[in-house]
Image (cartoon, rainbow, N blue to C red):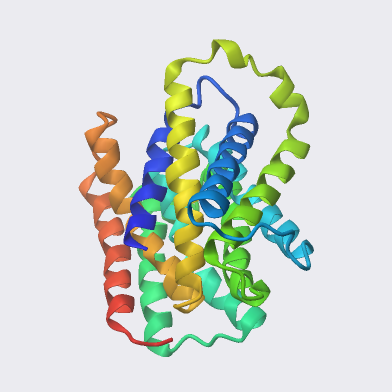
Length: 284
C-alpha cells in the first residue's frame, strides 16, 4: 500500500501535464483499455490463470461504474485545481470508507481508528483550503474539489464492495475483469469525445503519461488494492492514501511546479500522522 500511494500520487502530477492536450474521458478510456490488455496478458499468460467468464458479472459492472466515476472526476478536477488540493480531497476517502464498510460488510472501526481518521481528515481539509483560515471560514472550496469529492464517494463505496463481491477469484482475475468493466463504462459514456480526439497529432508527452497511468496507477494499483483488501480492513487499506498529498508535494516540487507553502505542508504532515497511528494498530 506504500507503493500504491506513491503510484497514485504520480497520477496527479503527471495527469495534470496532459490537461492542455486531451480531455479526461478519452484519456481514461485509452488508459483502461491498455491497462486491461496488459493485465489480461499478465494474468492469463505469464501467471497462467485460467480464463473463464466470471459468475455474477454484474459485480464487475457495479465496481467498474464506481471506478469510472472516480477516475473521470479526478481528471476533470485537475483542469480546475492544483494537484496538491485534489490529492488532499482523496485523503477524505478513508473516513468515508470506514462508514461505507460498516453498512456494506459490517466492519467496525475502533475508537483509535476513527480518531486517527478524523485527525487525518482535518489535515486534508486544511490542505484543501490552501492553509488559509479565511478561506476555511468562508467555506471557499473550488468547483474542482467538489467534482472530485463525488468521485471519492464512489471510491469509498467501491473498496468495501471488493470484499463483499469476492467469490474466491484471485486478485489478478478480479483486477482484470474490474478494469474491463471500467473501460467499457468510460468508452460507452465518451464515444463522442473519443471520436472527436485528434489521436494522430497528440504530443509524445501524452502517450508517455498514458503508458504510466495504464501500468502504474491502474494495472499495478488495482492488483495492490485487491490484494490488500483481502487482508486488511477496508478503512485501513485506503488509509494509506494519507501519504498521497505528501508524495504529490514532493513530485510537484521535483517537477519544477513549485513547492507547497509551509502551512499546506503542515496539513499534509497531519494526514501522515493519522497513517502512522493506523499503521501501529493491529485491528483486523
